[in-house]
Amino acid sequence: MARDTPRRSKGRRSPWAAAALIGIGLLITGGVYAGASAAVAATTAESTVASASTVEDGERLFQANCATCHGLDVQGTNDGPSLYGVGELAVHFQMSTGRMPLQMQGPQAPQKPVQFTEEQIAAVGAYIQSIAPGPTYPEPEVLDGEGNAAEGGELFRINCAMCHNVAGAGGALTEGKYAPALYDTSPLNMYAAMVTGPQNMPVFNDMTLTTEEKRDIISYLLFLQDTTSPGGFTLGSLGPVSEGLFIWIFGIGGLIALTVWITAKSN
Figure 1: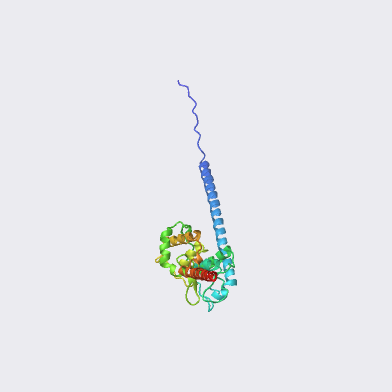
Figure 2: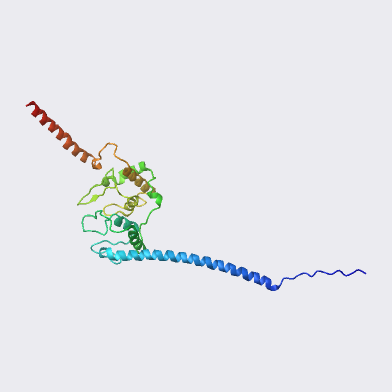
């Protein structure tokens, strides 16, 4: 008669173990999700507060310095135009060149020392953009000066030289107005002038000059700024007017002086 061998009892997992594992997994997953959501929410809140702060600062600056002429709701007054649709790019151009706030009424606003910091100008621009959207800042590559300067020179001579001079020296217009020289103009303000058309300048939208063509013109003007005159004195780069005046004064004057000296010597 065979002897009974002892059987090993198979251990059974408690039904509560599976529930415990699931619960622990859910707790860990929920904790990670809650932490990530809180971090994202905090970042978004900080960004929103910073943006709101900038717009609020710009509103205060606008009301203190600009609303007298442009109105509290930027709708314009008898002393200043409406700002609806001008955008932050026009604000940057006018304020970063000192043209605004306007010192006195005249044929056009002259460039003068800047009254505000870059941060203040950006704040006013953000406020205007928030209530009256318009042209905004371009991509950095548009302003890098790496476009086709030769193509830009041709475009400049066709579209801009009749007012700004071939060398960007500026020139007189009618009724006391003038096209400013571009020797010290920043790439951003070159772009802003083409897009917003300040004062007497026409607007060159993307149907007139594409973004790439604007980049080429900016590259040409930056080339002019960095290039010295190969012929010596530029004489203001005003072409035959200044050159003819120079020849008349010094050339004809030198001949008269030489004639007088020869006559005096012969006597």
